[in-house]
Length: 408
Image (tube, rainbow, N blue to C red):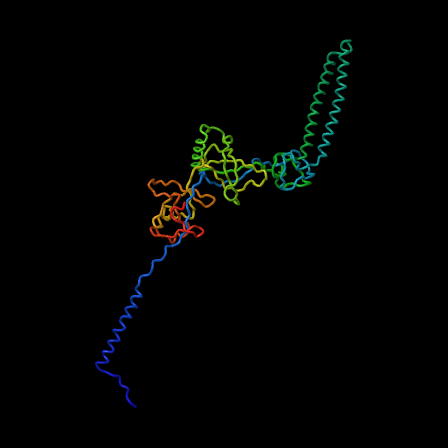
């Protein structure tokens, strides 16, 4: 076989150098493509909202409970057996509604017996009066002595007194008949009957309770007011009505709002009618009570409620969404999209009360030189994590539309 030999010599060397030089421009082009700078990313999108200005009333929010205006334990005034129960457990009744009836036969028999005894006394009185008249006539004729006349007069007077006493006894026994029919002393809602037909009822404070009754319209709301809030409330009340500090609370007609656990906000209203005359030293609170109409009997005694007590007159306040507030150690702040190139700036705030619609009141900062939130500020409410202070963002509203500076 013939050997395959590669050419060698100066010519071959020149060809290799030429190939290397020809490849250099291509390699340089590849390096330039890899090191070219990338375009800057677009600013992050954030959702913004404008502050609101409203008339709001500064208030104290407390926990309270409802209680009946009156509570009565229904007991029997006489001793007897229960013949009828005239209500259903839990009924709402008016004052005077019959509840229980005891066996009235023993009471009617006593009235009948006492009436018969009264007739005996009345018949004896007629005879005694006739005897007194007869003896008085005989006294002038010498047929009777003065002592006989005096005795006849005394006998007639004694029978008159016995008749009056017997008439009082009959009235008492008739009251027993009336008390054997037990009625509701007040209007309200009944509890369950503790004793039923056939049970013996004893009269007196130690006898079993037949049932209990609580008033339902109106109803009381009780709560404890902190001493600091009490002083602020009195100050605000004195500013509204100067010179009425000594007036009774029930006469001042001061309103309060409250809501049940299932209510949104504080939709119900009442009037304050009592405050304790001392501050509880152990808790630093004063007990306060209000009265509330309850015509539909919807509010039950013992229900927990949330109370809002207005502390002054309505004033203009600046509000921002509560979700916009951020925390930094002991400070609260919001992120605002500034007018200079949509760059983010920080503004410290002093938050106040949270309203029912999720808006937070902003109080006046203690530092007068602080950069305050303005009505035309674009507050970032969503996307705070992607926003960086002094860097631009793209502000959008809740519908995704751009919000330029000066939109208000």
